[in-house]
View 1: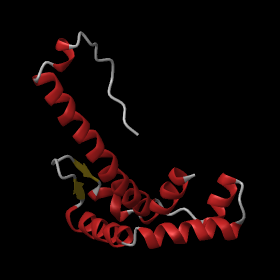
View 2 (view 1 turned 60 degrees about the horizontal axis):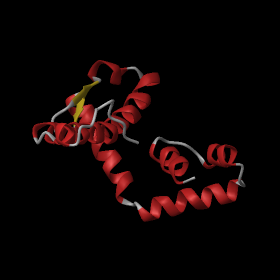
View 3 (view 1 turned 45 degrees about the vertical axis):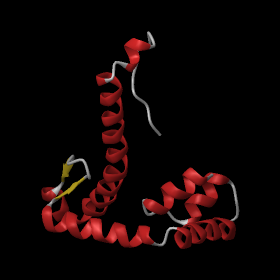
Length: 126
């Protein structure tokens, strides 16, 4: 439930979508979205700042330096809101991926897998 609320509220979903997804009333869905908005009030401001930076620079950049370039797509009014939302998602998901790479690199450098006779199959995060 929490993942659905977070996902919908972060990417522009409405109470009607949440109600349909979770099989709850519209009022209950609205209440959940409002509670999330109040608990994480800085999220809306952060999304505005990210969108402003995206429009000014044409890309967003994670704290590790990974970039998503979308400058040419921002001029298409039908696509611009999609690329704004996907750029916000990129920042969240890419920081997780970047951090996972740092951790795995450190584990590899310290020969953690070899010391424990472990095989590395693939990284997963969610």
